[in-house]
Image (cartoon, rainbow, N blue to C red; front, side):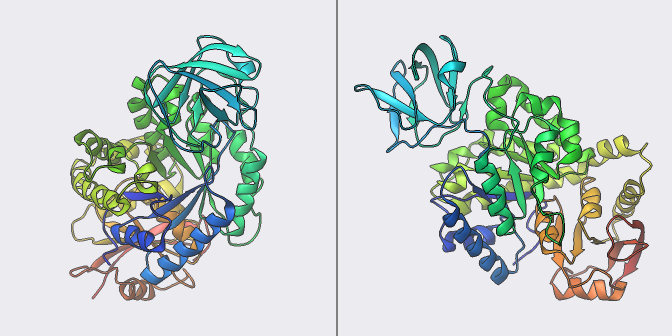
Length: 478
């Protein structure tokens, strides 16, 4: 298997269409770098079985993948709908708390939102399923909210609910989230996504629940999907390990016309902070039912890459779509073609380097110097022995032409690095290796392509110790 399919990484959400081992194997072969388990759906026992399956297949195929556990966040969701409900425009639809008796016939949508009726007024708009369905509140009778459907569509179980201006409980991890974190730690998930982040305190509250000792340190990802998160983005970036541009809820919380500009801004600020950034929601939604994406979707994926995203994430496309592997194959083709333009223009590297030029950190100086050397056409590969992945990410944000092989002795760090653009992570028993040993490890892993002869290697005063990288070397491989 070619380990260098595309520098842009792909995260696939698992669901009914991709729970089988055979489909997961096809997804890995197509180039998936991370698998998202959405804890809003399914039970923990089922998710545990999926994680075991993914780890087994990953080991058999020799392909590092990140296990991404996405927490539900504060309950702003519909409850269980026995079967999909088709709603016509203008239809009378009533929202009722889960478990409350339904008075009479009609369309009732159960929800799990505490105090919903008390927080609404006639004229409020309720968005369901990334805003695809819209309901206007007509009246409120006790716990029952009577609405009129503004658009036609189909409603399914557990769809997310957004109400602009509604002050729902937020900013605190729910008990379900805490159980989710415990589950993620038990199964050593690589990435834990915190939903509906509004402030850095939300991330710190989650981090307080993570292990303080040992070699397991999962990546804590902040999903940027609320107005408050945008307002506190720099502070959130300072305490998060990665971020996601979650355009579904973000496009409802804020005017939809602002989303393209916000996406660029969030990605740029994440690159400056050397934090991996994922773009999500409706990347190629039409492929849930169709064999090919629309031209607009292809352009959307390409623009996310040109903006500087490390990874793009698919939700329904791979969770319930008719051909999840085809989605990934097409995404990889788009990425490969787009990356040619990205390297040629060097726009991201110039923009980020200009912003960090005044910084005096040794990490920034080394990463910038490494990229200067990597621009030379005689250099074929960057090699970064790393304890935590920081050096590899700092170089990767400058989008060098050659790939970066990140050598680490930490399996979790390896899997997290699988989501950084242009980085191929490799686990070795110890990163305290000589240049010759490093080159041999890379060759044995099949990462020296024909014609490779010159490597750039970063190094530190103390081999294998985090935070000591302060130099780089150029070596020839024969």
